[in-house]
Length: 93
Image (cartoon, rainbow, N blue to C red):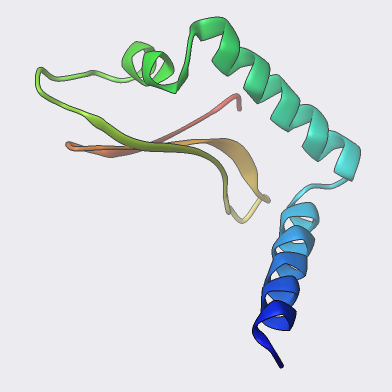
């Protein structure tokens, strides 16, 4: 398989896995839009991090991303924050 074929296969697999996590695609999209609106209302991911978790002097937010936490009851959508001090997950549940 050529490089373009591998990239297309990887992309298709990623889309399939992403959609599979939600019960319905409409629910998945609605949840992502709701989370995006919340991020905009608060003023960004760093502000959400500072509001929800204790933030030490000198601590830096390195990465924040939307993700799913797999549990035995099913996946939970939320935000994963990685800082210079800790790794934390936040969801609406």
